[in-house]
Length: 171
Image: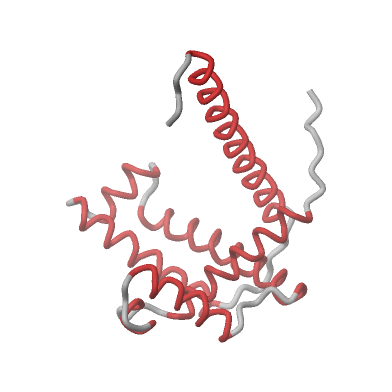
């Protein structure tokens, strides 16, 4: 790559390490901003059908993951999270629903929802990149609305981070 001298190598390593530092720092800032956002939200009267829907998604995900690695659901959750399966489901369901509600509120207030046209445009990019023939083939029985929510979460995340008032922590 044109590294002909020790100085070239040192500059390459410095540049690489600096970019890695900036990327890691950016990820840390994003994580803190989003955690602060969620922790400052208040959730009341969460619809039971929403809780049930998220719980089913979590149960399915854990079951697939456990099966792939030869564990029972209980063994996997205890090994990874040190929790009982029921405690994990309750905790994770609440966290995911609360996050979804908070992000949806921002999306509604700021006009960040994903339109049908945007969703099809994004999914068609995935179709093209993946060599699929259609959105339906790409989804393979998956839920198009799950993708809409995922892309909305990305837009809202960028909005929150871009509009956050970030200050240096006092030492």
